[in-house]
Length: 129
Image 1: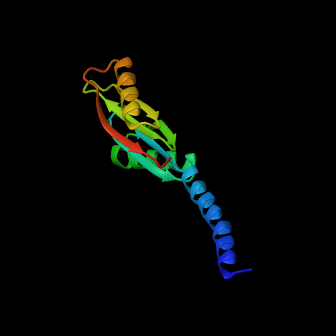
Image 2 (image 1 turned 180 degrees about the vertical axis):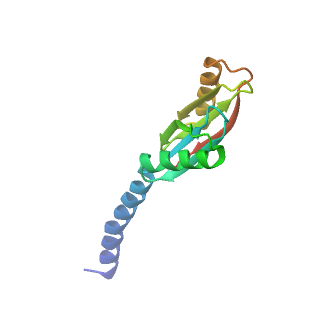
Image 3 (image 1 turned 60 degrees about the horizontal axis):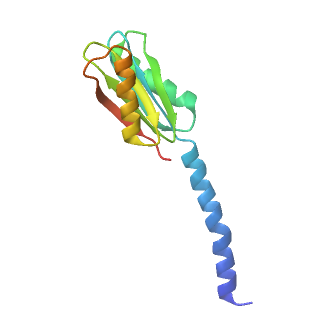
């Protein structure tokens, strides 16, 4: 058999393995947004391999700024966009979708549903998908 045949066979065997490995890394992309209801400080995380790690990082970041001890995860996502909307009266809403605009629309609507007026997007994070 020719050298080209063996080279093609080697490439055919390696490329799917590389592609599967790449998908595995993307499949484990978690993020979270945490917020303090009393101070309205926030914490964020993205591209973590586990939900627990993403939530812990977001809460830790929020608490390091807030110091109130009441930070909580408002939303988490895996391989999607997550968005936070807030209102000057303290209301907040979050949403997620694989579409960034849709995540923001959902977050704004949830903010309005919780009594917000003039809700505006304060942060959107899109994870690889």
